[in-house]
Length: 238
Length: 214
Image (spheres, rainbow over the protein chains, first blue to last red):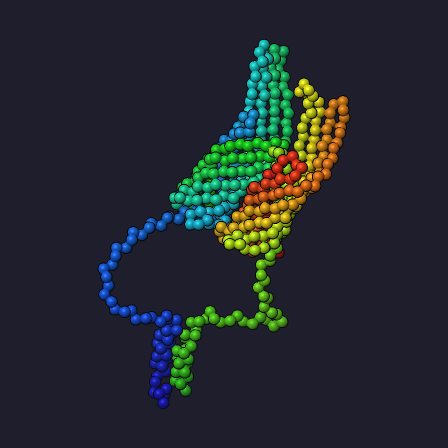
């Protein structure tokens, strides 16, 4: 009887209106009535600690970097030294806390080291020994970085890889009767252990510049050698 | 009549709307006929890994290859203990000279060693970040060393000495493991120290590896 007297559109509207509070009640949590009480004067809120700013967001997780520097052979009885060029590809892996980051670095480097010794034997006899070493190495490594400031990133890196060394020793003897020279070339393979530390500054969300100082290398081939390098670094994020 | 049907529909909406809000409780449809839902397989407890790097003995370096089989053991506090059996092979090789009493070179030497080591080990892994764990590995095992020493001396000729030595060995490694996927991980051990009885000296290795969970 009632259905016959209610217009259909009105019945539908009424049902929809009924449905809204019912569905709301189905998900609403029961609320207890708040007791009335006299509020005491509010205590001053403690000074909120300023949260540490997160690291500067770069354009992508990949970074292509290049470094140029100088490397010294610190093995006893060796004075080899020369320029070092390195190209590296870095990929962010996992965050270490709020301001830390672990990344993987694949680096390839070339070191051109030279040394010259000159001995004057007297009576017009002079002996000069020139040593030249060209080293190509590939060193994958893990890099842990920390950002004390949003744009500043300090890092430490540990890696292991291999190197190919080509060495040449030329001995020239200058005498009153003429000059003589002898040259010997040798190739060697060496395992490399690398430890580096440094810092970079983000210019914008793509470019970053910094320094790698110091970088230590231990090389194990037909003998053990160690070296020390200082480099300037630039990287492009993508 | 339209009105009773409309009213009925409206009342149905009013009753069912709370249930409609719980759409996430709808169960999955049944699998197609002739098939069954595959049960989720638990992760395997065994791993196999292949490592490559270098081994240095007395400053002489050589390539090193290591095959490793591992098995999850127990979890102690935050450390995950695993049992491992690494088998490593390396080939140090070096050349030298023979000098007479006055310091004049009179010959050359050539030494080649083949080192096979197997050291059952315990690895303690400490997770430090999602997918990243540091580990310390200690093992005691056996090392088989085949040595060949060749001397070529003026007015003496070529002499060759061969020796086969089986001796106990100790290994300690420090490294990290990063999970690349569900079953694949990369293992980096930049510091692996080893000591063999009846050997000229201790060894230092650095190894990169890929581990696969069976």
